[in-house]
Length: 300
Image 1: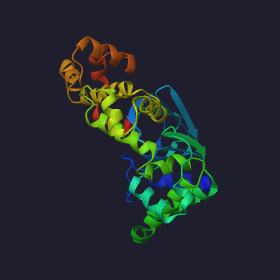
Image 2: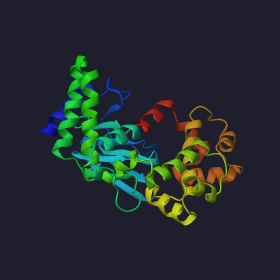
Image 3: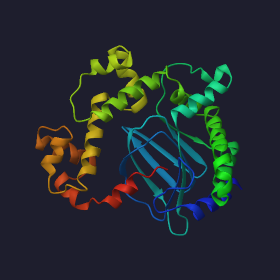
């Protein structure tokens, strides 16, 4: 019954741009499958009401379907697509941005054991079955789209309940790491943020390890646990995704785009681009468009 009402709400309220009138909430609807598309995960709860979606992070592959949810606690370069969707049964998804400050505030209000995370960092992405309590809270949040007068007061309360269901659920440790400033994940997230902001610049792993307050060996180990990539592989993935975005508006300047994202050798840029996306940048540029880029950003 939960999924039936959730499907109805998503079908009625999903917009072409996936936006809603509730801050941080996105709804998606696809009537056909589409090829695996590079994008970034954001820090998000993504819940599927109908259809199946597959995500790849490095060499890890995650698949989730109706009644399952995915959480991402670090903004990572991923490749994703809905693999099951049709006009008769469109793929339907709910997404909620996870704000570290909101998670931290919730943990401070909860019992002491809610702020403890055993062991080291976990992978930043995980999939679980959605319990009835979580589905119920999501449905109550989406019902507010039919009652705009109630949104300002009730939406923050229900979003806080959803966060609590996540922090006390199967993937609670991943979500709690997001709100704890001294967690191993928060230190890796600092390095991830630095690479994303300076992706065109060369760096030394030793300097990033120092930024996180870890030894080089611990940094390497924890970075790979969280992101499924080494720091250099992560930088390469970000460079190539940024290059693909640039090619939507600079399709005739492949060499210039390669230089802008940090490649000194055009041949190396073309070789690594083709390895990542299956076609060289000069050919791929002709198929890219701003509308395709917008679709790639969709998560769930």
